[in-house]
Length: 238
Image (tube, rainbow, N blue to C red):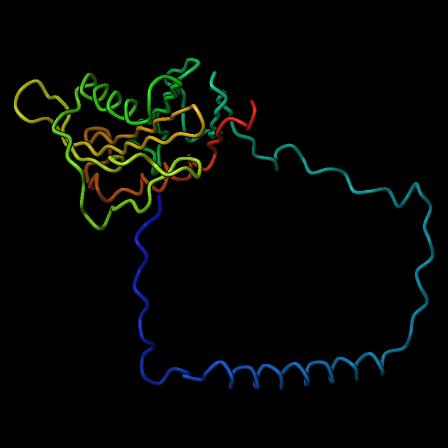
């Protein structure tokens, strides 16, 4: 996922309009001046003898960085060979050999539910339709594609593989018992690599986010995008 690129703006009046050729001559002049100045400094500086070699007991290599400086994630290994690395801003709500269920832990993740599901049966389109049906079982209904440019997902993909047509961002409602329930935004993408298909599903429940922030304006999709950086397809021949 990546946000829509902002248009390039014409520089305002009064800003430099030097072309590339003029900038090249300026840069060349500065480089000559710097080299000449550097040569003068070195010519005027006396030469110092190399420092004496020190005993091995003193010149030991520096110690390795403390463990507290290293940040390690948690790796979910799917039975079909794919994996996902996630960090402590996500908590595990459930997992098995095919599915990982995560819940966001505060910040941009607040109110976000994420599921990664794999399948080696049927096609990627079959998995996409199954995931839509699964959302209905969770009480999410009235799903409709979102065409709002502010949250448009350009070139949806999973692990570098293009998502199946029909993937994208959807708007719907959660079942509220009586009448229309609270709004919910759903991200659903399905992609395949070899004989394995993977579905990424994430949704935001308006009842679980800060009331003073619109669901649509939360940077949750950027957070999910960061999470998907840790996804890996099965290794070739694995």
